[in-house]
Length: 225
Image 1 (cartoon, one colour):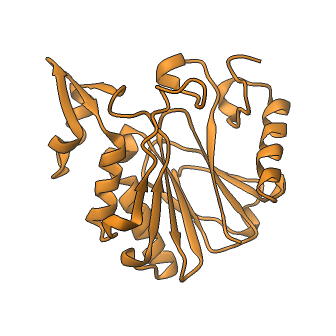
Image 2 (cartoon, rainbow, N blue to C red):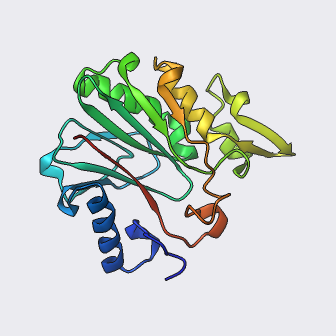
């Protein structure tokens, strides 16, 4: 039922637990995977990472916004309703990662930290990775105030992702901010794809917390064959 229709995958949104479990089962079944393989993160709006393996199946790993794996027995999951999903893969080393990053995670460099975590855990090289930046609130709709804008002050591309709209207010381009982070740590520009779909602009396709406040959650699901 509204506002959680259809296929709400987030347990913290206020939807019935039984409905969320069934929605997750259906989503995973569409990928040929089982609910028991599902691994999620607590999503604390930071930049900490955890490696997930078969022992983590069915768990919510605390304190992290980045999950990575080389284990084909797990499906990594992050949940969103405007924040940015960043998906990473290392085809040669058969490794993958998924990142949840809003403005706080972006300011802390979560996308770049995911690349560093894959390098440390699996020996991945940034030049070998491919990335997808999925649907999230776009620079058309994401207006922020001075304290949020100030969190990006240390990034050299700050002015490229903040557009002044009036005194003390900016439009923030989270897509571009995360793309630039990936380039900063050595990923080739051609290896980073951006969906360019604004969650707030498309009520027919996406949940959006900024648009609706009380709403469901989408998921980014990553698994190795």
